[in-house]
Each structure stands twice: as C-alpha cells, then as structure tokens.
Image (cartoon, rainbow, N blue to C red):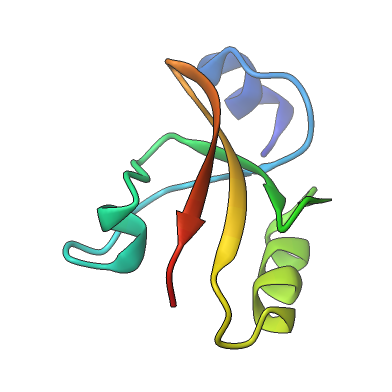
Length: 81
C-alpha cells in the first residue's frame, strides 16, 4: 500500500490492497473485492505483500482470519482453506 494509493482509497495505515479476486475462490465466497485493504492476517499486522504471504503460508491448510477495510468500514473475514 503506497501513500498515493492509500490517499486514493481514503485509508491510513499499513496493509495490502486486493487487486483481483479469482471467481469462485474462497476469497470471493468470503466477500473480498478489488480495492479492499487487508490490514491483518490471523491478528498479525501486515505491512507489505511479503509479510502477507509469509503469514498466510505459516497458517498452512488452516483457515485464515483477515481484518479488511473497505468503503463500508473495517470487518473480519474468514477464508476457509
């Protein structure tokens, strides 16, 4: 999440921006959409894509809990794996 993108989204703070969601994926079924900002994975703050990937990988095949900010506010989303 670069400062320019954060301003465009009206968001402050660390996170990663969802740029695409595969149709019929677990993420799509959970309601993730392009432009959402993922701030946490399993209650661990993610500041960049590398941190996001590392935290998701550490979860193995377990579900992951995401803190997501979208235009409607912040909410938690569970991605079943």
